[in-house]
Image 1 (cartoon, rainbow, N blue to C red):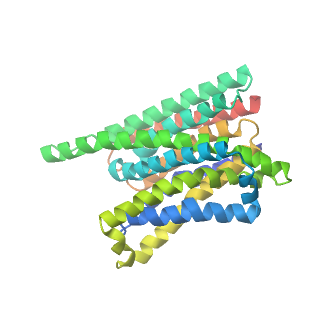
Image 2 (cartoon, one colour):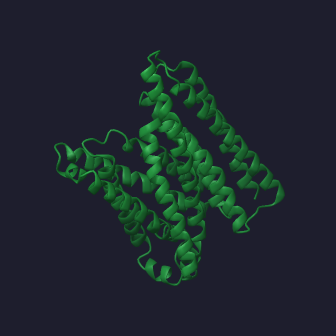
Image 3 (cartoon, rainbow, N blue to C red):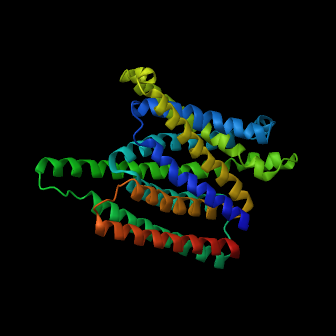
Length: 337
């Protein structure tokens, strides 16, 4: 189980870092960047990595009931819609605040809903500790959100600046909240698609390797939503010319690196859920979101998002301490299961 947590930490490091690639990707427009990201990160890398570890993975997918495939893909489609909103939220209110709102909703709903839907409720003592850890995490997210709200308060007396900031904040918070709902659906779809993992395991495939197959199923719906929207914008805004713009090679590199880091997080998370035991996808999802939020906050600090905001920065650090406590409590719940 210790190795499972170590793998989960690596997944969190990737999850908390990939958002950096969604900033400063000029000369690409957002849609030009997102189309490349979708093809590489959501479609090609999951297929390639899964094929390398489980060459016959399509055989096991074909043996999975259509209802399972359809529901898991639909959850992925919901995530695909929300991931577009996530990228827009980062552009609107920054990395730290977007991660805070998004992951608070994603962590709580994405872990507890599968717990009840699939009837994998742990013993009462373990479940109580798990709920306490979830509440502590939400408190930490609330503190971090408060820090972000204080940071975004207008610092200038200029009325036009005040109106501009005030108009961006509600929009950004709404986008981040909707993205959180979609992120929760992502884990629900992943857990549901684990029936394919069981089929592969029954045929002698290692569960750790087979854990990648549910992502292929779930992300199929996500790819459709992400890529279709990006292509629509490319033609509507005529921004497909960005791919041949001066300096585009740098943007291509950033999109590719972002895509690799993004799915590396999900792939490692999938393997960690198997290594963590029966509550892997519940405890793992809570920890995955919580620690990734801490890491993203660290990048936000390094990137200068909190420069000059002394009091909000203190709230941010306090919120991170609370998240660390929640991570420990959630780990204890898994040990007691």
